[in-house]
Image (cartoon, rainbow, N blue to C red; front, side, top):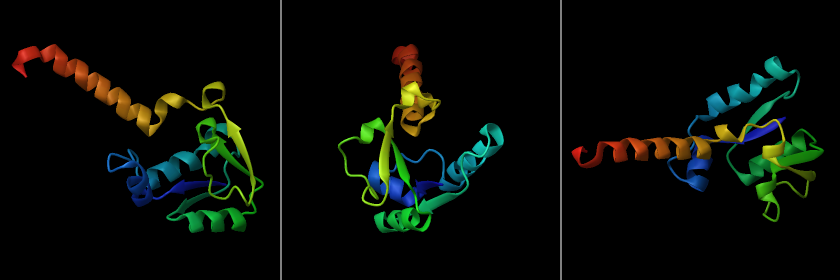
Length: 122
């Protein structure tokens, strides 16, 4: 089971430049993993609040919460309900080049090159 934030929650937590992909698209992308890699994800839930996430974790009786290693030492919602396992995305099958933040970073870099290439012409 995978739980994802609502679009509104992401805007509130990270700013109005995110999410790049809306929650329906993100849900779909996760759901299709089972057709590509086998039965990886049985269900995708969307949550609006910390309490919603805790309820999802409780309902599905999660044994583990899997978080990127950048979360170590930070408050993790539901850590009192399941064991937290950290992973290093760069050493796993996760393609770190496709995160929303990385996409924005690449777009801005390309934009800067384009603008710089125009010079004073604008």
